[in-house]
Image 1 (cartoon, rainbow, N blue to C red):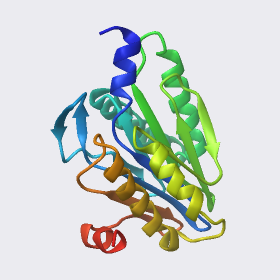
Image 2 (cartoon, rainbow, N blue to C red):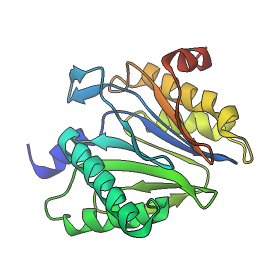
Image 3 (cartoon, rainbow, N blue to C red):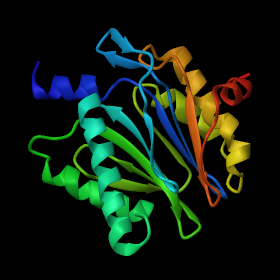
Length: 211
């Protein structure tokens, strides 16, 4: 398999979503890990807590993504030791962009969504494997199920809604993607980051919102 074929296959599976709300951000993903047509696991963790006010979703190569998560957590802890505060979403995105850009000749095969609170302001960014990033003002999605998820979010998104109000739509966007995309499936994970901190919705809460 050549470089192009490999990158297309490894970045293709899964669905992740990010939504900007009036009081914070929502991040969500499924839990299916696939290797081409083989379903490798139903328990993949694709939404990761970096700090109380910072989270990230991962898609792509498992080893690459896990390294990026561990590296960012370590850098965040170092920053807190030196500065007495955690990385903001903007600072964390700038750091990840540099890391990905510096390794573009042998890239990390990842697509990332990174979001959280920056002095009370919700921020959401999407990053590609070459370090390019976009500040998202409404919502975004990655992975093979993203066209379906984006279509749903385009229809239901309204500015000014809270994370509590939009959480059901994050769940439903992922649920709809599961119905149409075989590489998306199993459990839905959704988290909210607000001034109150980092909240992961329980399986029971997600199941209720999915109805």
